[in-house]
Image 1 (spheres, helix red, strand yellow):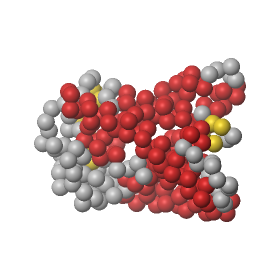
Image 2: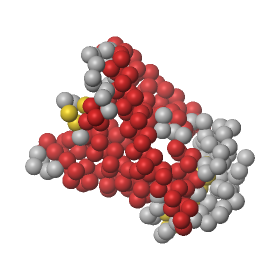
Image 3: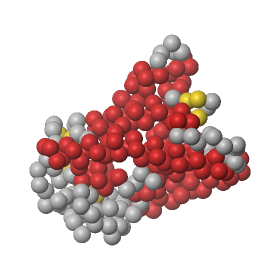
Length: 252
């Protein structure tokens, strides 16, 4: 187990491990129940399930950003190169509810903005809404979580602010998370017949309505969500650390 100063006494660690995880499972159960009743996977269900499959990238991105979770969380027995050593068990379900909340709010705001300003191009509407939202959202999450002792940064790249015994980046990795968020928000709001265009580009609607088509839709979401997260966010953190980062004993 790896521990660092500031992580030995996290504030109410059971909040993430049990309360948020339980709430996420309840949300998933409701979404699945409603989808099976309607015999069609809803936007939120597709989003939740595909976001869960992205969790494995968290620990590669953490390595790139020198992020270290407290070992007061229940941790996975997973040790691999280029990953941060502490891997909380709550991560898969957290990815589900976290990105479902974000990518429900952002497309809703973008579509509302375009309804009021129909002359505004979709790309512009996404940038106006998503860029400030993602930067501020992630900044609040980072500073509050570091302050609560849930994680810390063993090193930083670029300008940073001293906060609660550690340094939290003001630019990196926020710039890549913001860029990823704007790109994913665009793909989710670029729609044809009410569904994201990437479903049709990946051939998810080539069969008659039914569960075969719904599973194809889910596959298209999983591929798209993972690919955009990897190439729009995770891989850049790995490259930045390789290019500009230094060796670190806590996140080796």
